Image (tube, rainbow, N blue to C red):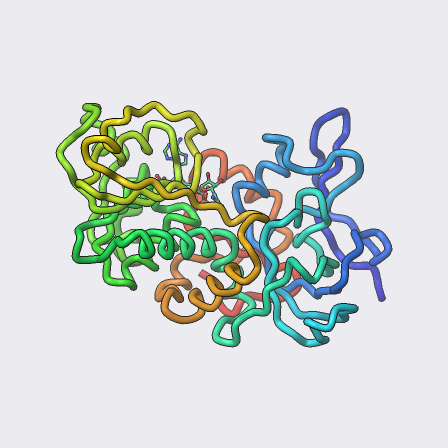
Length: 337
Ligand SMILES: NC(=O)c1ccc[n+]([C@@H]2O[C@H](COP(=O)([O-])OP(=O)(O)OC[C@H]3O[C@@H](n4cnc5c(N)ncnc54)[C@H](OP(=O)(O)O)[C@@H]3O)[C@@H](O)[C@H]2O)c1
């Protein structure tokens, strides 16, 4: 096989240096299944790896990054997969300690691979990826906790982000009245288009700092953490449900026990990393191809050429990215916005 294009992070004097290179199959990590990568995406985790934030990528040797991948099986030594299968891989060690999605070929353990449901294209799979899986798990956990559209509105923070925008569309599809909480005043039309019934500014949510404030929501999905978690908890109605998926602001909590003790709220953790079991992972992908399939995926996802990868990373740190950025690694997107 001819050498192929890959984007690798090298660690030089403790600092990351990213570059496109030509690699051979011998130079990428081994695994049961060889996949020809069609699309990847950029997540916050990828931006951290490229810029050396949080030290989440291996440093002892160069690493092909990219934590989300859709592609076509080239060969497999595991019976579960055959040449031509459409597959998706998200997280595990992909793109952090195992060579990942930013290369025209990837080799991964069969245990990490989800067969792509036939109702999803390879492009749509990366319009969803880790962000979609996170949003779908939040929908499922809140449903299982008993949250229903008739209970009242659901608030979603980090609304224009990958998780936030997909969650807005999924909850709206399930009949919920969604309140999108965003710092981007100029994105109200986008947020309404993808399903928000109302848009609230971050400042408005932060205005009332009382330990318990008048209830506004029956449920919430928090993608940013910190003070936002505190304010959402204080604004839930009795028996409200709060799912926490992210910590874009920070991991520390400043809150009181009052929302739990006086309003009996539930808090649900969301984690789609390695600990999400494969049967559960497959079930969520099935749901993302059926009852949770976004109705506005074309608006939420935006393709970029493979060559634009490095130049698109920093927007994750100043929070100017909107929705999902899909990377054309080995295939071209079916449309361009
Ligand atoms: N639990 C899991 O398994 C899991 C999986 C995937 C991601 N995550 C985490 O979930 C979070 C969201 O992921 P994502 O992919 O949606 O990230 P993203 O695309 O970077 O979006 C994050 C959004 O959060 C808001 N935000 C950013 N900085 C902020 C700040 N300083 N104060 C208030 N809001 C801020 C912005 O939305 P607005 O401008 O609209 O306010 C931004 O678009 C991240 O922390 C990520 O690490 C967790």
